[in-house]
Length: 300
Image (cartoon, rainbow, N blue to C red):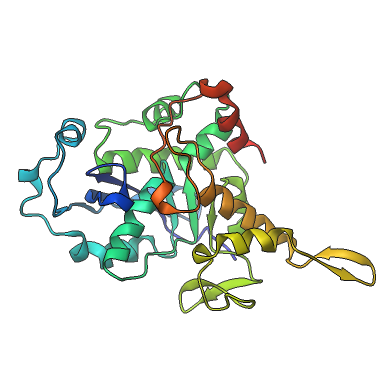
């Protein structure tokens, strides 16, 4: 499956806090849409941004960080009023964010509250992971520092559209230095990301990624991560000895999926496969704990 014809959507959320499972809500969502021309150059074609009424008070510390006040969002739509547009922007796109798992958790919580399916990007790529791989000796991997290393302007950090634009431009600069073929799995592997799987035990059905066979046929992989891990390891006996039950391409995808969704760099509460245990990634720790966990993320 190819990817170069797909839109690249860099996005960011500002939120009332860092705990979506505990009730924190989105207060701003922005996406910066890039399209590729015949010469392989990317240009910004749209920058939709919304202030969002969170339906709970905005903490003072969040206002100090973002400048967004309760008064500023008083006349803004709640997330349910923009959900369809957010879905359209991200579903099937090459989606990029800085600390993608956090934004993913916030969006998943909002869509779950609406009892609505969340968007499924064709690729889910994290510029934190790309920063670690590209600049392994850097002391931190905050967006502002990555932008400075790549000579990308970031005027107002901690506002969604500014962060999303800088994130997207950083991604495109790092992509330009690579030689990623027009293959979706190759793009995911290069970026240490995830997204749509190759054909095999999982497939795209009715616009969703689902198991095609086994005890969880017709269900999404996120509901059964331990079964995914089993598929990566399971073997069967043949006349020629033992062999893996699952094709190598799918096993590579499973390992990327489990790495992106099931491990983390966050110091207070290391991210697990359960959203309730996710915590934000400070992206500042290149020398903490002798940097071993950061370097492990960048190791193929």
